[in-house]
Image (spheres, rainbow over the protein chains, first blue to last red):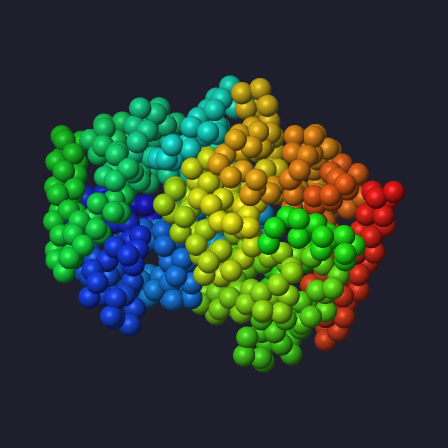
Amino acid sequence: MTTEKLTAEILRKESFLCVGLDVDLDKIPKHLLAQEDPIFSFNKAIIDATHDLCVAYKTNTAFYEAYGLKGWSSLKKTIDYLNDNFPNHFTIADAKRGDIGNTSERYAKAFFEDLGFDSVTVAPYMGADSVEPFLTFDDKFAILLALTSNHGAFDFQTKSCNGEALFMKVINSSKHWKNSQRLMYVLGATKSEQLSQIRDMLPDSFFLVPGIGAQGGDLEAVCQAAITKKVGLLVNSSRGIIYASRSDDFASAAREAAKSIQAEMALILEAVNH
Amino acid sequence: MTTEKLTAEILRKESFLCVGLDVDLDKIPKHLLAQEDPIFSFNKAIIDATHDLCVAYKTNTAFYEAYGLKGWSSLKKTIDYLNDNFPNHFTIADAKRGDIGNTSERYAKAFFEDLGFDSVTVAPYMGADSVEPFLTFDDKFAILLALTSNHGAFDFQTKSCNGEALFMKVINSSKHWKNSQRLMYVLGATKSEQLSQIRDMLPDSFFLVPGIGAQGGDLEAVCQAAITKKVGLLVNSSRGIIYASRSDDFASAAREAAKSIQAEMALILEAVNH
C-alpha cells in the first residue's frame, strides 16, 4: 500500500485507528476455545466487527509465537483473511526485528513476501545496515522504534548521545538511510510532550502511536502534538478494543469501543481541516 | 542448563564452539531438496557430524521464519532433535527480540517453554522492562546485544552516551537488572579491541561471539582479549562450517571445518590453564 492510499482511506473513514490483534487465549471468551483455531476465530470476529471503523490492523507476533506452530498458523490465516477481504487496510507485523544485513533480508522476506504484511516494526540498535534491507520493497514499510511507550524508554532512548537524545539521533540518522521514504516511526502515546518536537523533524512521516488506553496515552494530546494536514498518524489500541468485553458479546463490545475512538478521531480530523 | 554445566562441557570437549544453523535452501546440496523437510534433514546431518566438537548450537530464527509455517516446523524439529539426543548442548534462539513487558513475557514463553531453548538473544533498545521478563526462568538465559559485529554497530552502539559509549551504558545498566545473573552478552568478534575492556566490566559473564569466519573475526584475538580461567566464551561460526562444502560431502566437510576450529580452541584452552 502507498501512503497516499492510506491517507485517502483515513480521510474517507474519518479514522486513523489501528486495531491491535494481540490475542491471549486466557482472555478470550471460553466458547471460542472449542473451535479448531480459537485465535483466528477471535480475530475474524473482531475484524468483521471493526473494519469500517479502522484503517489498519497490527498483529504483535509474540502473541502468536507463544503458541508455537499453531500460533504461526493463526497469524498466517489472519493476514490472509485481511488481504483477501480487506485489501485496503494497512497491515502491520509488530515484530520488532533487526539483525545483520543478510538476516534482516530474511526477516523482510518472511513478513513482506511469505506472510504478505504491508509493514513490520524494526529495532534500530544495530544501525543502518540492519534496517535498510527492509526498505528495498516497493510499497512496503519499516516502522522504526524511536521513542517507545514503556518505562524502559528512559533507560537508553532518552539519554543524551553526542549532544542529543538517543531517539533523536536514531531519527536524524535514519533520514539519511537508503530508501528512507519507506520508513515510519513508532512513537509512544505516553510521550506526547516530545511528539511535537519529533513532528518538526519529520513533517511528512507516518507515526505509529501505541499506548492509547491500557498504557495511559491520551488521544487528544497526541493529535495536538503530531497531527498534520495529511494526518500522518496511526493510533493503535489493542486491549481497550479486543477485550472490551470478555463474554459472548466481545465482538459488539469491540465495535463499540472502536466506534467511540473513531468518533473522537472524526472530530479531531474535522478540526484539523477547518 | 547452568553455566557451571556449560563450563564443564567446554573443558571436557576442549571446545567453546557454537555452530550456527542458519539454513538457506539456495545453499544446501540439491539432493536434500527432494526430502520432506530439507531444512531439518540438513540440520540433522550437520548436528550428527559436529556434536562432539561443539558445545552449543544457535539457530537464527529469521532463516526459519523466511519459510513460513514450514520453516517454523523445521525449527521445532531441530530443537526437539537437539533436546532429545544431545541434552548437554546449550541451545540458542538467535531471535533478537525485545518488546514491552507483557509482550516480552510472551516471547520468553515461546522460546523457553514452547520451543525449549536454553537461551534467546535480546535487543536492549527498549530498556530494563523489555529484558527482565526473559530473566525469570530458572536455568534459562537472555543474551543481550551489546556490541554487534556489523558495520551499523558504529551508528549508535559506539556513540558517546552521557559520557560512555552506548554499548558500555547498556552493559553497566544491565548489571543492575533483576536476575542479571541470567544475562549473557553478544559481542562481535570483529571488535576485539574493545573486548578486553568489556571483560574487565563483566569478569564472570558468558560472551556469545559471532563474526568468526565470513564476517572476518579472529579467534586468537578474541581469546586474548576475553577468555577467563572459566573460559566464559562461546564463539559462533555459521557459514564457515555449514557451507564448508555445498556438495554431497557437506556433512563431512562441516565436520572438518568444526574440527579445525576445535583444535585451535583446544590449544588456547591448554595455554589458559598452564
